[in-house]
Length: 178
Image 1: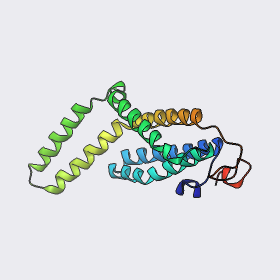
Image 2: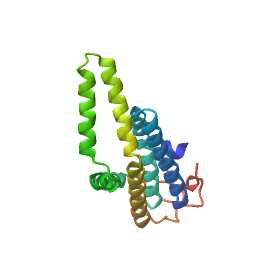
Image 3: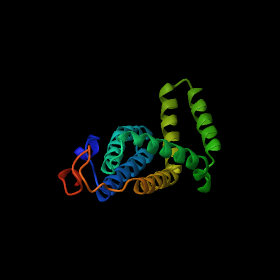
């Protein structure tokens, strides 16, 4: 659990990839649950921002670099996510503008009945429908971002075999999957 909760210490490449795969699986599961249960469950994903950061900081530490370089990884992930969000849904035949307009019409129609509960119910169902339509592009986007960030991390961070200011070398306890 310490692996995901604290940015202190070091992790080697295999531990990094195990952590990334676990975090990706959690992200995909949240997307799936959010699409079929409630779109609001997707907000739980915000809680997993810190574990992603902690894992990347430790990986930078393993190569003797400052954990602050994680900011560059976050910027890279945001840029790639935005670019993918612009074209990936359309590759799967999803017209986001039309979907949004349809949702708005349905919600306005329900709201005009004067029943706020009905409008809220329609809004929830429309949100679930949109989340279901975008499920595959969403998971694919997360997979692509994870792969690109992982490749960059692999290229930038070679394990420092010696002890450094962040902890002992790979033979030490901090380089194992905790």
